[in-house]
Amino acid sequence: MKIVYEYSHLGGSEILEVRYPKENAEINKAIKDIVASKTKISKEKTSPGKPCYSPKDLNKDFREAFESRGYTELRNAFDIKVCTRDRTPSTVRSYKQIDFHKGKVLIEVQFGKYAFMFYDMAKFQYFFNENKADVGIEIVPCHYMQKEMSTGVSFGEQLINDIDRLKRHFPAVPIKLILIAPDDD
Image 1 (cartoon, rainbow, N blue to C red):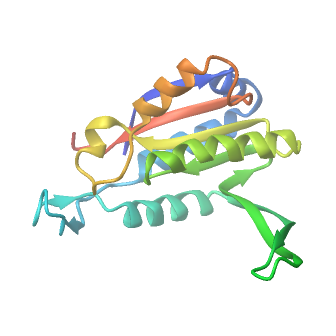
Image 2 (image 1 turned 90 degrees about the vertical axis):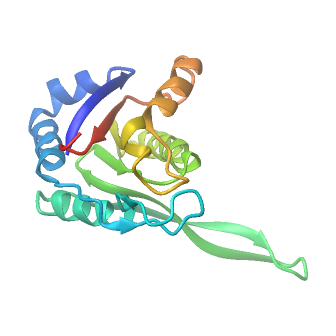
């Protein structure tokens, strides 16, 4: 894969370059080591039989690339008070989870719907507020890669546009957005 664009929010890129140069290099190398192939055949009405990039396969490739470099999932569990059907109070166990982390560098790889990209920003904010993160990295497809994937997958330019419109208000955590595409483009 190749990096086609990077966006720095609240100094995310600069923090990686200055405070976490090793992790920054590892992230870039992990992306470059992934070879994307059109392994999925579309069954969708709009493009039946069309070869496309599989989010499931790409997620597997990213998991292997980051885990081989010592990155692990970050999970923070907590209890939530809920009401049951009969309106009696109860408690359920829940959690916030990040795909990969090493120290205070968090990474989310997102090939899902736009809502999940934006929810990743909230998770970065949560872990930043818990003092478990200094910077978040969101790895997402660029627009032209998204056109070669299943319907429903979002693209990074949309997320950048929304973050720009929110100015510095949300997320209030340093983030580096990395837009990727296959090498063969």
